[in-house]
Length: 68
Image 1 (spheres, one colour):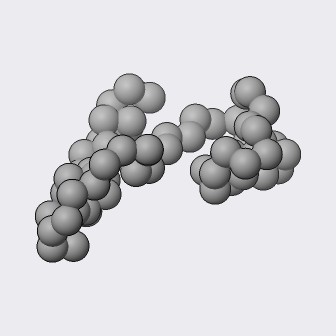
Image 2 (cartoon, one colour; image 1 turned 120 degrees about the horizontal axis):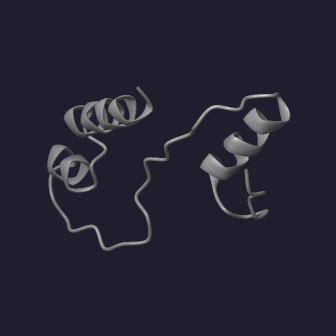
């Protein structure tokens, strides 16, 4: 597992802590990246960024398909 840079975000910090604790599984990061997010209702913005419940569920299902 590559070592994350000091300021590379909370997911990198969590991955490093998990690695130090002996975790050897895979980690899937869901983040906003560095992209433009338009104005809108919270539900629309979450859907746009793929952090709404349905999108997160779909990501989890995709990861589980790959691992099994």
